[in-house]
Image 1 (cartoon, rainbow, N blue to C red):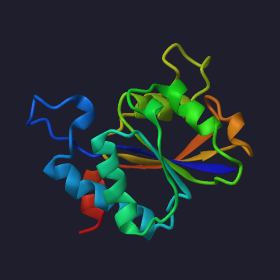
Image 2: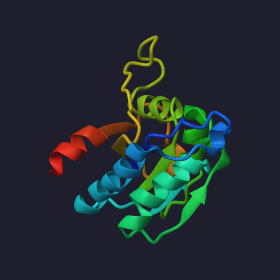
Image 3: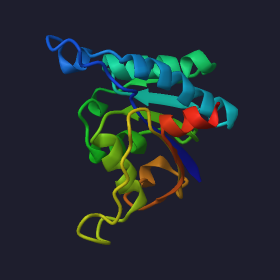
Length: 175
């Protein structure tokens, strides 16, 4: 069995309309939430063995604050297809992982993060809507168990959600 950590980037700053979407930084709330989500990974022994992230500024900052500042020293891959990518793009990234990877952290944007979470939890043909629709807030972090031995076998419906944490809940729990 493999595990997947799925993280939506923290809250971004919209104050400068002249910035391209790709270049938007984190807002103050995002700068505070990202490290908290990293603390969750440390406290519960869930640090990834690989990080794959969109290369946008806000996802880079989220990665730096959530895992790099919390002791992660492994590889970080910047994957262009995760910027604006959909669930097929996220699944393709997962399917390309080497067998040695047991618990990757995938960092991206909505709607791709939500689509991927919902796709991994529900087989495609179950209902017209895909079966479930779980919303993921900014800096929302999910841990899924993938009931596969090889990443190439990742497909819709092969995962079980272990937990989904949002910054508001983490803030309350860490008080």
